[in-house]
Length: 233
Image (cartoon, rainbow, N blue to C red; front, top):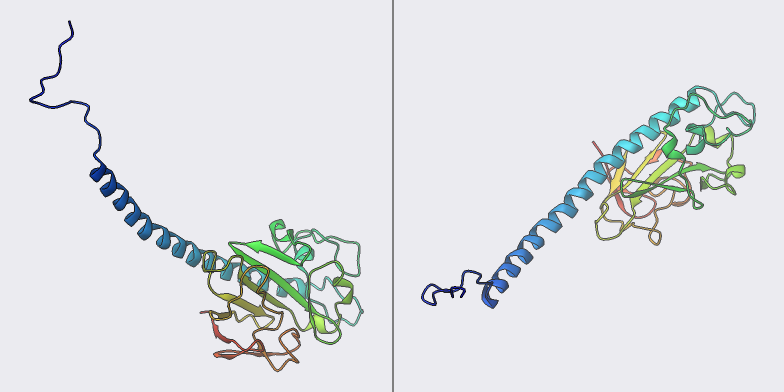
């Protein structure tokens, strides 16, 4: 006959009481409330640092591409800045049937979608070259024939903004052009596909924030989009 547990010592397989379960769940909720926001903030900060590095890489590639004299559509010896897909050898260079080799950019930068954007480290990135009026056009198949060869020898802009709202993928919007100085804006609210910065958002002196034919940057000032831009050091 099996021995029964001594009731004076209680059960050896005692489970959690309701109060203990509530305490454990409360502690877990508190920890989640602390850890998750810190994780999201850390990821956003890391994305911002990474996208600044990406913009520096793209700007360096643009100047190297132009100095190599690879695109001169109007044959005026004033070489033009390139598109992302040209600089990574994915697309033929304008005015030729040749693909750049060796390239000045990694092939990963060829992933430009139908809007003329690529994604990188939680950010959308768009490169713009001007048409004959100075309007910045993204890297879309329909836009590329409209790039003006003279103005494209002098101007380009690159804009990067968070893919998601609320600071989950990043908080600031970034801008750089042929002058190499990276600017950022914390207050524009740019995010995703619904709140998109225009090509000349951080410029002064252009017709509006869609034109990029200006050498005046909004350094510690309001840009053409009405928002304040500050330099990234």
